[in-house]
Image (cartoon, rainbow, N blue to C red; front, side):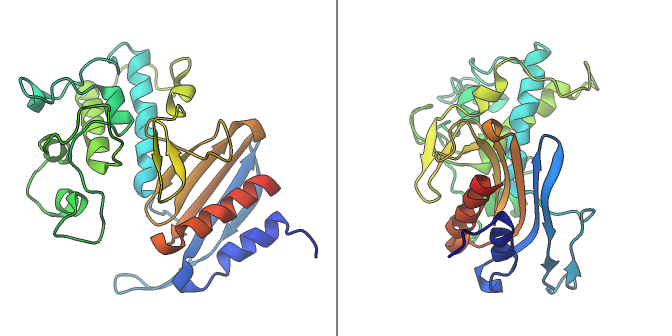
Length: 267
């Protein structure tokens, strides 16, 4: 039997039964050149009709935005506005048992703060309450007010609340107006800072760095990963970046990851 090509694997992603997930966009870039590209069709729902996806279509990134937040922190380091290894500037924590939590512990998802990252169970999910409960005007304030369940730095717990605390810190520091050079110049070593392993997610099989996910099968890699199958995977040693956008439920997420891993080998 002939070995599958990258085109075969992309075809598999985009022709899956709808209950196994929907791929809406896939792009792979090497050396600044697009080497693979495919777009799908978004199914209709009660809010919007079905539509063909193009390169101009706006799609959700979900939690991939967390990884860009890490880059934003790096810009503030360059400007001398922040130190990730000292207690984070969170006013609500002054004089409490949380006041020693550092920004790097927030980036590693090891703050020790309580947070249930669930998008389905409204009775237990801190995500649903934070985003849609209307109980607090600031997502960062909501997350900062949650109890401390573990010694900071001791337990990995993936948390969108943590990212909102980091985002608020960034916002507070730049709220006085634009400052510095607008070019996205990061501190020396910040890429390695992002991909330093600090935790592991048994459900996905992926490691965690500092607001970036890491693929153990590809040493030196790092990735932005969002709800329902959003991925930006960076493989520096292959000079390859892969982007996948769509809607894949958790039951089929490992299958999608396996296809992306196969593409990384074939492209």
